[in-house]
Image 1 (cartoon, helix red, strand yellow):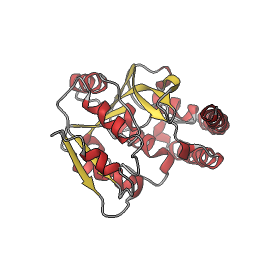
Image 2 (cartoon, rainbow, N blue to C red):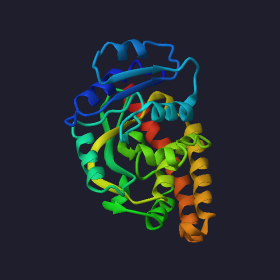
Image 3 (cartoon, rainbow, N blue to C red):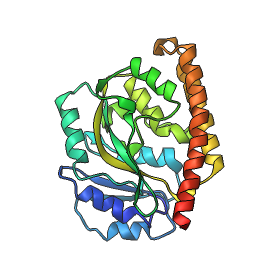
Image 4 (tube, rainbow, N blue to C red):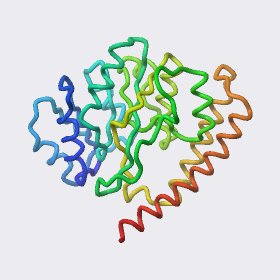
Length: 266
C-alpha cells in the first residue's frame, strides 16, 4: 500500500469475501501520507496484519517486505487498488495443491477504470491454458512484447520458490512482476487457468506518454536479456517480433489512456 485511500477498502473487502478462507492478509504500507492505514485498521479482521515501513522502500523493497512477512505456503501480491473475485483463491489454491511441481498459477483479469467500471474484459494468457513451461512459453512471451500473465493480482506463487530465486528484482520497475514469473518459470512448470478472477486498474497516475515509452523500453531490454541466453531457445526472429510488438503496444497504450481520460471527463 502507498497512498491508496481511494481504493484500499475495496481491495481489502475483495480479499475478505473469498470463498477460500484459510489465508492471512499482510498489509505492508510504504510510509503513506494519507488515510490508507486508518482505513485498513478499521476492518478489524483477525486475519489482517498491518506492517508500516518507517521510510519509503519503493516497489521492489515493499513487495519483498510483503514476501518476507508472509507466513503462508502460497503468496499473491496485490496492489492497493486491485480487486480479486470471490473464487480467485479457491481456484488457484486447488491448482497448486493438485500439482506440487507448479511454481505459480495465473488467471485472466478485467481492466478497470478509477470508478471500478470494466473497460476491457478477460485479458491475459494469450490463449494459453493448462500446464506451461519454458522454453515454448518464453517464445510466446518474447513475441508478445508484453506481460501476458498479468500483474500480481493475477498470479498465485509458491513462497519458497520465490525466495529461492532471490525475490522481486526492481531494476526494471515496469516489468518487476513479469521478471519474477519468468525466473520462476525457468525453475519449473506453471499453470494458465483460463478463468477471469482478478482485475487491473488503470489509474490517473498511469495516463502519460512517458509511462508507455518507458514501459516499451524496459520490455525491449527484458526481451534482449532473455534472447541473449541460448538456453532459453529464443530465435532472432522471436526477439525482432517482440521488439516491434513492444513499440506497437506502447502506441496502443497511449490511445487507450487517451480514451480513458476522455471517458472520465464525459
